[in-house]
Length: 495
Image (cartoon, rainbow, N blue to C red; front, side, top):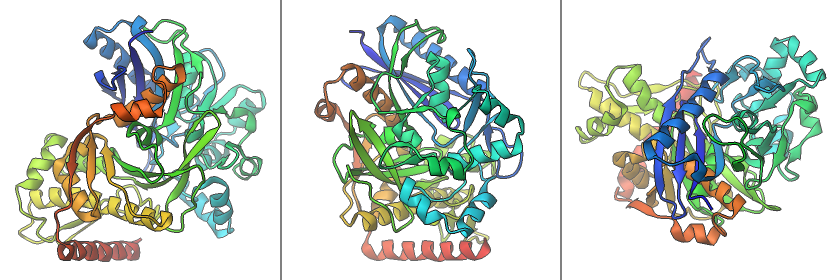
């Protein structure tokens, strides 16, 4: 059997291609960024052709850099930014129909408010595990059809496809129109218990059923490559997962109660709740983590929309950094934030508050405030958000938090990881493979072709980089959380 699994991690700001061998070692990775489009305030769009180009270039660079022959690729796994809503034609090229509406986009906030006012949120949450928020795909599809009169005709003729980014990539790679259960669970259109499209929800959001992809388990044959860049035809595509579920899998969080947090553009905490969905009373989302054969594993998830993006804002918006990697050194150049506190609600607030109209809040500024204090407060603000997610999960699951496994680009920031351990009072375990999202897609693809025999083999091969243990006193922790809670109350007054 060929020696590597190729994982494609199509993220919000770039695409990463990664090669993994049987020992879970990364042979190489390459990332290609692509443009973000902001046509109006609170609108975020992606050009699907630019995404496709980033995928092709990332794979070509990876193979050229590593010297790995395309013939040595056993299978392909796909993981992706979730909820981002794409429409394309059912033709040979998968011609895009307009730009994709990104998960961060808030244009459907008023529509969500209208549905809430009709008392529909509890019914929808019971069916899907999700809340009514612009975050999810269904309201974006509804907006596209409402604002483009030609889409209904295309749908009636059978020429239109909808999908999250995994579906679009799969279509371009193989001609197949499918999605996996984890991505489908993030659309507001799938019944959590049956793992099938829900007719009542399709009617509510006026989504034609014939534009939807087929929902599949996580590690099965989705299709085989056909005219896919420099890769030969016939490579099996055997794993697909939404990015956060892929990261949970890549962290080997296979046991009930095990948890991870991915620090990327946003921060996403997810805990394995086993084979029964747990419905949150504290603002968390219930989601499908994966489905292996006929066994569905569920999870509780909390999403903070801004994490690494806050550091990007320091760099691009405020000009405090020439490179994002400088933020840790700048933050450590002062002993504390000198009373500065930052709530990084730059794209609304997700769990547990769910305030679409929220904006960032920076408090405690004085004449003595320096860029270092703001940098430190920004990193601390990310950790405060994650701490709220973990606290809510603890209440929902009614059990102690297990050690928190962490991954994503911002997890390389040791100051942030130590502050997270201090604030949340749990050991924080950083994976040896930071690209755990891509690793999860590779693992599922490998399981789909027998590259790895089972979850036990994967668990034995999984490796830790570093563990951060809580050090902060209970008194200091309490004081910091009280200040954060006051800032959140002030923010709510301002919305």
